[in-house]
Amino acid sequence: MEKHLIKLIATDLDGTLLNSKKELPAGFMEWVSGHKEIKMVIASGRQYYNICKLFPGMENTLVFMADNGGLVFENDKVIYINEMKTEDVIYCIEQFHENEKLSIILSGEKSAYMEHTSEEAERNAHMYYEKLEFTTDLRKCIEKDRIIKIAVFAEEHNAEKRYNKLGDFHNRLKAVLSGDCWIDIANKTVDKGTAIKILQEKYGIKASECMAFGDYLNDMYMLLQCGESYAMQNAHPSLKEIAKYIALSNDDGGVMEVLRGLL
Image (cartoon, rainbow, N blue to C red; front, top):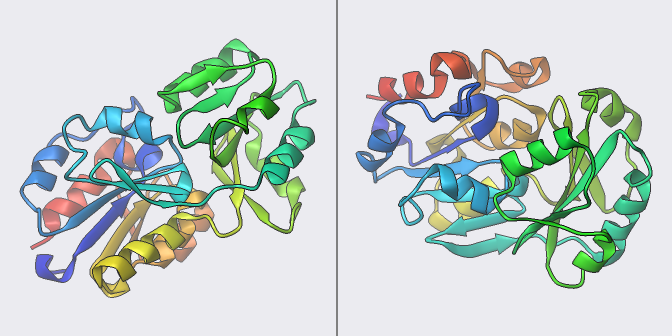
Protein backbone atom coordinates (compact mmCIF):
# COMPACT_ATOMS: atom_id res chain seq x y z
CA MET A 1 0.00 0.00 0.00
CA GLU A 2 1.53 3.31 -1.10
CA LYS A 3 1.47 6.11 1.43
CA HIS A 4 -0.16 8.63 -0.93
CA LEU A 5 -3.19 6.37 -1.28
CA ILE A 6 -3.95 6.52 2.44
CA LYS A 7 -5.43 9.83 3.60
CA LEU A 8 -7.01 8.80 6.91
CA ILE A 9 -5.96 6.27 9.55
CA ALA A 10 -8.19 5.41 12.51
CA THR A 11 -7.03 3.35 15.46
CA ASP A 12 -8.68 2.12 18.60
CA LEU A 13 -6.72 2.53 21.83
CA ASP A 14 -7.12 -0.24 24.42
CA GLY A 15 -6.08 -3.62 23.07
CA THR A 16 -5.01 -2.03 19.79
CA LEU A 17 -2.61 0.92 19.85
CA LEU A 18 -1.88 0.70 23.58
CA ASN A 19 -0.09 -2.30 25.02
CA SER A 20 -1.33 -4.21 28.07
CA LYS A 21 0.38 -1.64 30.32
CA LYS A 22 -1.69 1.11 28.62
CA GLU A 23 1.43 2.56 26.96
CA LEU A 24 1.73 4.09 23.49
CA PRO A 25 4.14 2.28 21.17
CA ALA A 26 7.56 3.82 20.71
CA GLY A 27 7.71 6.13 17.72
CA PHE A 28 3.97 6.71 17.29
CA MET A 29 4.02 10.44 18.04
CA GLU A 30 7.01 10.94 15.77
CA TRP A 31 5.31 8.98 12.96
CA VAL A 32 2.19 11.14 13.20
CA SER A 33 4.24 14.36 13.22
CA GLY A 34 6.14 13.17 10.16
CA HIS A 35 3.00 12.30 8.17
CA LYS A 36 0.82 15.37 8.47
CA GLU A 37 -0.70 14.68 5.06
CA ILE A 38 -2.52 11.74 6.68
CA LYS A 39 -5.40 12.51 9.05
CA MET A 40 -4.87 10.40 12.17
CA VAL A 41 -8.00 9.55 14.14
CA ILE A 42 -7.90 8.16 17.68
CA ALA A 43 -11.17 6.23 18.00
CA SER A 44 -12.05 4.97 21.46
CA GLY A 45 -14.86 4.18 23.85
CA ARG A 46 -12.97 6.36 26.33
CA GLN A 47 -13.91 9.88 27.36
CA TYR A 48 -12.41 12.74 25.32
CA TYR A 49 -10.56 14.25 28.29
CA ASN A 50 -9.06 10.88 29.13
CA ILE A 51 -7.86 10.33 25.55
CA CYS A 52 -6.24 13.78 25.42
CA LYS A 53 -4.14 12.98 28.46
CA LEU A 54 -2.34 10.29 26.44
CA PHE A 55 -1.42 12.76 23.67
CA PRO A 56 -0.20 15.97 25.32
CA GLY A 57 0.20 18.85 22.89
CA MET A 58 -1.41 16.92 20.03
CA GLU A 59 -4.93 18.43 20.29
CA ASN A 60 -4.46 20.30 17.01
CA THR A 61 -2.79 17.39 15.21
CA LEU A 62 -5.07 14.43 15.95
CA VAL A 63 -8.80 13.91 15.55
CA PHE A 64 -10.30 12.42 18.71
CA MET A 65 -13.33 10.17 18.43
CA ALA A 66 -14.64 9.55 21.95
CA ASP A 67 -17.47 7.46 23.39
CA ASN A 68 -17.42 5.04 20.44
CA GLY A 69 -18.04 7.83 17.93
CA GLY A 70 -20.75 9.68 19.84
CA LEU A 71 -18.46 12.70 20.26
CA VAL A 72 -15.78 13.88 17.82
CA PHE A 73 -13.24 16.62 18.57
CA GLU A 74 -10.92 18.34 16.12
CA ASN A 75 -8.65 21.25 17.07
CA ASP A 76 -10.06 20.92 20.60
CA LYS A 77 -13.60 21.71 19.38
CA VAL A 78 -16.68 19.50 19.06
CA ILE A 79 -17.43 18.83 15.38
CA TYR A 80 -20.03 16.11 16.01
CA ILE A 81 -22.17 15.02 18.96
CA ASN A 82 -24.94 12.42 19.18
CA GLU A 83 -26.88 13.04 22.41
CA MET A 84 -29.18 10.52 24.08
CA LYS A 85 -32.77 11.44 24.94
CA THR A 86 -33.47 12.00 28.65
CA GLU A 87 -36.11 9.28 28.79
CA ASP A 88 -33.68 6.78 27.24
CA VAL A 89 -31.00 7.54 29.82
CA ILE A 90 -33.54 7.04 32.60
CA TYR A 91 -34.67 3.78 31.02
CA CYS A 92 -31.09 2.45 31.09
CA ILE A 93 -30.55 3.54 34.69
CA GLU A 94 -33.67 1.62 35.68
CA GLN A 95 -32.60 -1.44 33.68
CA PHE A 96 -29.16 -1.83 35.27
CA HIS A 97 -29.21 0.11 38.52
CA GLU A 98 -30.41 -2.57 40.93
CA ASN A 99 -27.86 -5.24 40.01
CA GLU A 100 -25.09 -5.20 42.60
CA LYS A 101 -22.59 -6.74 40.17
CA LEU A 102 -23.07 -3.95 37.62
CA SER A 103 -21.98 -0.31 37.82
CA ILE A 104 -23.32 2.47 35.59
CA ILE A 105 -21.36 5.43 34.26
CA LEU A 106 -23.09 8.24 32.39
CA SER A 107 -20.64 9.74 29.90
CA GLY A 108 -21.47 13.34 29.03
CA GLU A 109 -19.94 16.16 27.05
CA LYS A 110 -18.64 17.91 30.19
CA SER A 111 -17.91 14.98 32.51
CA ALA A 112 -18.77 11.40 33.44
CA TYR A 113 -20.98 10.54 36.40
CA MET A 114 -21.37 7.51 38.65
CA GLU A 115 -22.51 6.54 42.11
CA HIS A 116 -20.04 5.09 44.61
CA THR A 117 -19.96 1.32 44.09
CA SER A 118 -17.15 -1.20 44.45
CA GLU A 119 -13.44 -0.42 44.62
CA GLU A 120 -12.81 -2.32 41.38
CA ALA A 121 -15.54 -0.47 39.49
CA GLU A 122 -14.29 2.92 40.63
CA ARG A 123 -10.68 2.04 39.80
CA ASN A 124 -11.71 1.10 36.27
CA ALA A 125 -13.82 4.23 35.95
CA HIS A 126 -10.87 6.44 36.88
CA MET A 127 -8.77 4.58 34.30
CA TYR A 128 -11.00 5.61 31.38
CA TYR A 129 -12.67 8.83 32.58
CA GLU A 130 -10.41 11.78 33.36
CA LYS A 131 -13.35 13.96 34.40
CA LEU A 132 -15.49 11.89 36.75
CA GLU A 133 -18.03 13.13 39.28
CA PHE A 134 -19.64 11.01 41.97
CA THR A 135 -23.31 11.50 42.77
CA THR A 136 -26.05 10.02 44.90
CA ASP A 137 -28.62 10.30 42.10
CA LEU A 138 -27.66 9.69 38.46
CA ARG A 139 -30.96 11.16 37.25
CA LYS A 140 -29.95 14.63 38.44
CA CYS A 141 -26.84 14.53 36.23
CA ILE A 142 -29.01 14.41 33.10
CA GLU A 143 -30.17 17.96 33.84
CA LYS A 144 -26.67 19.47 33.72
CA ASP A 145 -24.99 17.70 30.80
CA ARG A 146 -25.59 16.14 27.41
CA ILE A 147 -25.28 12.39 27.88
CA ILE A 148 -23.73 10.55 24.94
CA LYS A 149 -23.08 7.05 26.27
CA ILE A 150 -23.85 4.80 29.20
CA ALA A 151 -21.07 2.42 30.19
CA VAL A 152 -22.01 -0.65 32.19
CA PHE A 153 -19.16 -2.26 34.13
CA ALA A 154 -19.58 -5.98 34.86
CA GLU A 155 -17.53 -6.72 37.95
CA GLU A 156 -17.47 -10.46 37.27
CA HIS A 157 -15.87 -9.86 33.84
CA ASN A 158 -18.81 -11.58 32.17
CA ALA A 159 -19.85 -8.69 29.95
CA GLU A 160 -20.21 -10.87 26.86
CA LYS A 161 -22.61 -13.24 28.64
CA ARG A 162 -24.73 -10.32 29.83
CA TYR A 163 -24.53 -8.64 26.42
CA ASN A 164 -25.82 -11.78 24.67
CA LYS A 165 -28.90 -11.71 26.89
CA LEU A 166 -29.78 -8.11 26.04
CA GLY A 167 -30.86 -8.62 22.45
CA ASP A 168 -32.70 -5.68 20.88
CA PHE A 169 -33.69 -4.19 24.22
CA HIS A 170 -34.75 -0.72 23.02
CA ASN A 171 -35.97 0.67 19.71
CA ARG A 172 -33.74 3.78 19.82
CA LEU A 173 -30.68 2.38 21.57
CA LYS A 174 -28.07 -0.27 20.93
CA ALA A 175 -25.51 -1.99 23.11
CA VAL A 176 -22.00 -2.88 22.01
CA LEU A 177 -19.44 -5.09 23.69
CA SER A 178 -16.27 -3.09 24.27
CA GLY A 179 -14.31 -5.39 26.57
CA ASP A 180 -14.63 -8.39 28.85
CA CYS A 181 -16.14 -6.21 31.58
CA TRP A 182 -17.70 -3.33 29.57
CA ILE A 183 -20.98 -2.91 27.71
CA ASP A 184 -21.54 0.49 26.08
CA ILE A 185 -25.03 1.79 25.31
CA ALA A 186 -25.83 4.74 23.05
CA ASN A 187 -28.20 5.82 20.31
CA LYS A 188 -28.56 3.32 17.49
CA THR A 189 -26.99 5.88 15.16
CA VAL A 190 -23.78 5.96 17.24
CA ASP A 191 -20.81 3.85 16.23
CA LYS A 192 -17.23 4.42 15.15
CA GLY A 193 -18.10 3.63 11.54
CA THR A 194 -20.73 6.37 11.37
CA ALA A 195 -18.26 8.89 12.79
CA ILE A 196 -15.63 7.81 10.25
CA LYS A 197 -18.17 8.28 7.45
CA ILE A 198 -18.85 11.83 8.69
CA LEU A 199 -15.12 12.58 8.50
CA GLN A 200 -14.89 11.01 5.04
CA GLU A 201 -17.71 13.21 3.78
CA LYS A 202 -16.34 16.33 5.50
CA TYR A 203 -12.92 15.97 3.87
CA GLY A 204 -13.84 14.21 0.63
CA ILE A 205 -11.92 11.05 1.52
CA LYS A 206 -12.92 7.73 -0.03
CA ALA A 207 -13.27 4.54 2.03
CA SER A 208 -10.50 3.02 -0.10
CA GLU A 209 -8.19 5.78 1.14
CA CYS A 210 -8.79 4.89 4.79
CA MET A 211 -7.13 2.43 7.14
CA ALA A 212 -8.44 1.22 10.51
CA PHE A 213 -7.18 -0.88 13.43
CA GLY A 214 -9.26 -2.50 16.17
CA ASP A 215 -9.57 -5.38 18.60
CA TYR A 216 -13.14 -5.54 19.89
CA LEU A 217 -16.73 -5.54 18.65
CA ASN A 218 -17.18 -1.78 19.09
CA ASP A 219 -14.57 -1.44 16.31
CA MET A 220 -16.51 -3.52 13.78
CA TYR A 221 -18.27 -0.76 11.85
CA MET A 222 -15.11 1.34 11.77
CA LEU A 223 -13.24 -1.50 10.10
CA LEU A 224 -16.09 -2.04 7.65
CA GLN A 225 -16.06 1.67 6.75
CA CYS A 226 -12.35 1.60 5.80
CA GLY A 227 -10.89 -0.13 2.77
CA GLU A 228 -7.75 -1.24 4.60
CA SER A 229 -8.89 -2.90 7.83
CA TYR A 230 -6.75 -4.62 10.46
CA ALA A 231 -7.85 -6.73 13.41
CA MET A 232 -5.15 -7.27 16.00
CA GLN A 233 -3.85 -10.77 16.67
CA ASN A 234 -5.43 -10.45 20.13
CA ALA A 235 -8.77 -9.32 18.68
CA HIS A 236 -12.19 -10.84 19.28
CA PRO A 237 -12.73 -13.75 16.81
CA SER A 238 -15.75 -12.03 15.25
CA LEU A 239 -13.67 -8.96 14.42
CA LYS A 240 -10.98 -11.09 12.79
CA GLU A 241 -13.65 -12.55 10.50
CA ILE A 242 -14.58 -9.18 8.99
CA ALA A 243 -11.09 -7.60 8.86
CA LYS A 244 -9.11 -7.58 5.63
CA TYR A 245 -5.83 -8.25 7.48
CA ILE A 246 -4.56 -9.48 10.85
CA ALA A 247 -1.88 -7.34 12.52
CA LEU A 248 0.51 -8.37 15.26
CA SER A 249 -0.90 -8.09 18.78
CA ASN A 250 -1.03 -4.81 20.68
CA ASP A 251 1.83 -6.03 22.90
CA ASP A 252 3.91 -6.71 19.79
CA GLY A 253 3.37 -3.23 18.37
CA GLY A 254 1.07 -4.36 15.55
CA VAL A 255 -0.16 -0.89 14.61
CA MET A 256 3.32 0.58 14.37
CA GLU A 257 4.57 -2.39 12.35
CA VAL A 258 1.90 -1.67 9.72
CA LEU A 259 2.49 2.09 9.79
CA ARG A 260 6.23 1.67 9.31
CA GLY A 261 5.51 -0.61 6.37
CA LEU A 262 3.64 2.09 4.46
CA LEU A 263 5.84 3.05 1.49
